Amino acid sequence: MTSERALPIAVLGSGSGSNCQSIIDAIEAGALNARIVCVISDVEDAPILARAQRHGIPAEHISGAPFKTKIAGDAEKQYIARLTESGAEVIVLAGFMRIIKAGLLEAYAGRIINIHPSLLPAFPGLHSWKQALEYGAKVAGCTVHFVDGGTDTGPIIIQRSVPILEDDTSESLHARIQIEEHEAYPEALRAITSGRAKLIGRRVALS
Ligand code: GAR
Image (cartoon, rainbow, N blue to C red; front, side, top):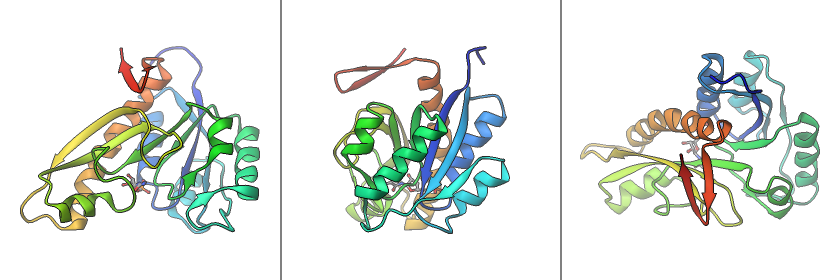
């Protein structure tokens, strides 16, 4: 751990928050030089909010309405206002199920990262582990990437693979991918907090 100041990050999520938990655990273990300044969910009763609160992290619900799959308009303004007020310098999407549009992207250009449950560019979009299983792929995994204007198209920071087994179900495969996610997200954040992640074109060099 360096003596440099802890990077203020915000986590956005819509569900269980197990990835957020892995980041909290890494910080509390002294393995990640960051502090979570706020957790925001577009889902009022998402467990991610309770997880954050249990660790003394400010957590709140901000609706994404009127849209179902994106953050835009007034909702986007509310997100930007809260994130600005929190002092977050990097926005971490951890199971946040809405597309980030131009306003938020421009406010945090190059400083929004996401975790996706596939080896991108394969299987972008929803339920990617299920897509991989149904396609008949032999390998699945997860990707941590910078967010750009496309759907799961931004520069890749880290990927981890898992084999797809003959007897895998959608649930068993997602569970194994999540084990890798919980290692990959803190690892990618460590590369960012220590200044080792350098964007060269659309490639991310981890020096
Ligand atoms: C994770 O598997 C994450 O990769 C996925 O949602 C899950 C959230 O789990 N994200 C996406 O599918 C984004 N397109 P969590 O709430 O337990 O972290």
